[in-house]
Amino acid sequence: MLDITQSSYFRLFTPNKTGKYIATVVQTIHRQTIQQGLTLERCIQKHMKQGEFNVPYNNKRYDFVCNDHVYEIKDGCAFDTKKIVGEIQSLRMHPAPVKSIVFWNARDVEDVHFSFKGDDIRIMTGREFCDEHQISFDAIQSERYNTRDQFTKEIIEAMRWIVNEYDSSKSP
Image 1 (cartoon, one colour):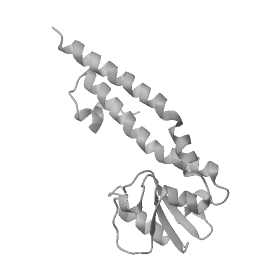
Image 2 (image 1 turned 30 degrees about the horizontal axis):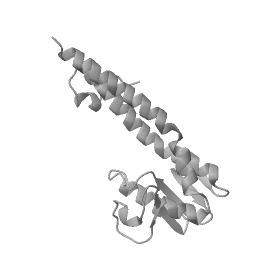
Image 3 (image 1 turned 120 degrees about the vertical axis):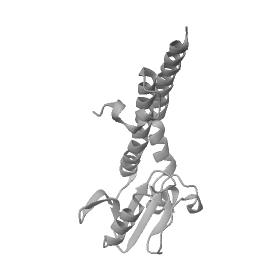
Image 4 (image 1 turned 45 degrees about the horizontal axis):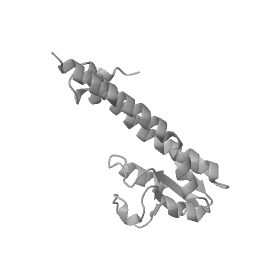
């Protein structure tokens, strides 16, 4: 495992024990945020009656393929700007005639922070995806939220320790 003092997280904070712990908490939150995309795919997969997940094609893995449709599923309402060009190119290379990017948490496609040229890729919300595949959006969301209370408790305990450590280091 990477020494947290060598990370950009650590460079954000005072280089002491408290800063090291803050950096670890921030890194943990970031890691958990990324993990949520995989958790989302697993939850969707449990509800699907057809289609395949994590499908390899031409040195790329696609999130979900069903019949003549390929989907890229994003947990959120925005597309990482560093990845956008590669993701769009990969979708366009897949032979499926219908290509979609699902922005799971968007209430409406107008909420999506994403731009690209062309109308060959459909943008849709998680609820639209669920309606299309006759699965329950609310049930999937409920499953995803099962672990958040424990994670919240762990982060609060870590923050409490950080504040106590900081306060004690400032005492005479």
